[in-house]
Amino acid sequence: MKIEIMTLFPAMCEAVLGESIIGRARAQGLVEIHTRNIRDYTKDKHRRVDDAPFGGGYGMVMQAQPIADCFRALCADWGSRPRLIYLSPQGKPLTQQRCKELARLPHLALLCGHYEGVDERVLEALVDEEISIGDYVLTGGELPALVLADAITRLLPGVLAADAAYIGESHYNGLLEHPQYTRPAVWEARAVPEVLLNGNHALQEQWRREQALERTKRKRPDLLRAAEHGEWAAGERIETGD
Ligand code: SAM
Image 1 (cartoon, rainbow, N blue to C red):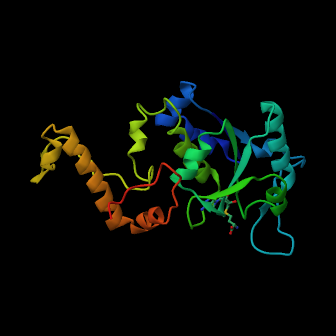
Image 2 (image 1 turned 90 degrees about the horizontal axis):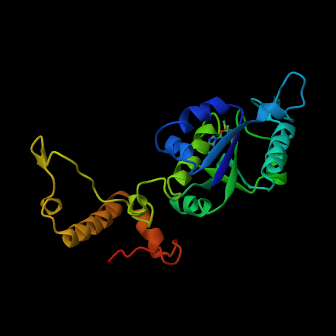
Image 3 (image 1 turned 60 degrees about the vertical axis):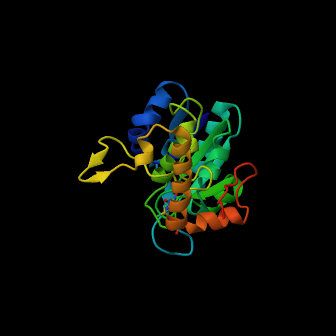
C-alpha cells in the first residue's frame, strides 16, 4: 500500500514515520509512506500558501491553488488518482472499522490543513472524505494524518508478527481487549489470575472472552449497544452472551 501525506510540515511527519513499527515496515517495503510539501507547489513569488478569509474573521486560510497543484502532481506521478482524505475536526470520527476498510485500498492521499483550515472549494473539487480523530481541535492535520497512517499500517500483512496480534485487540470486533499481565507472577502482593498460569488453553481462551465482555460492559457500554443495533459488518458482529 502507498500513502502520501500532503503537508506544510513534512519534517514533522518524517520524524514519526522513521521510528518503531512504522519505520521498520517502511524499511522492509511493507508500506510506502511519502510526504509532499504543499508549499513547493505555490505560484506565489513569496512562496505564500495562505491568505486572510473573505468576509473577515480570525486567522488565515490555506489557498486552493497550491493544494490542487500538489494533488494533481501526485496523481500524475502515480499514474492514477488515489482517494483523497482531508483530516478535519468536521469529518466523520475515525474508527477501527474504517481503518480496516482503508487498509484494503492500494493507495491513499492525506491532506493536512493548518491555520483556520483550507479553502472550501478544495473540499468541493477534490476531497473524497473527511476524517476526524476526535471532537477537539488541533493546530494542524499532521498528527491526525500520522494517527491514520499508523492505524492503517499496523493492519497490513506482515507488519505485525501475526494477524492474531490485532484480531483480539480493542475495537477489532467491537469489544475492548481482555487485561494483560507479564512477569513477575506476583508484584507488590498483586498476583496474576491463576487461570493464566495453569496451562489450560481452553480455559484461558474462555477467560479472555469473559474479561473482554465484562470490561466492555463496564468501560464502554456504548460499544455493546452499537453491536446490538447491528452497527457491525456481517461476520464481525460480536456475541454479547446477553
Ligand atoms: N477552523 C477549523 C474548524 O473550526 O473546523 C479548524 C482548523 S484547525 C485549527 C487546523 C487543521 O488541523 C484542520 O484544517 C485539520 O486539518 C486539522 N485538525 C484539527 N483538529 C482535527 C481533528 N480533530 N481531526 C482531524 N484533523 C484536525
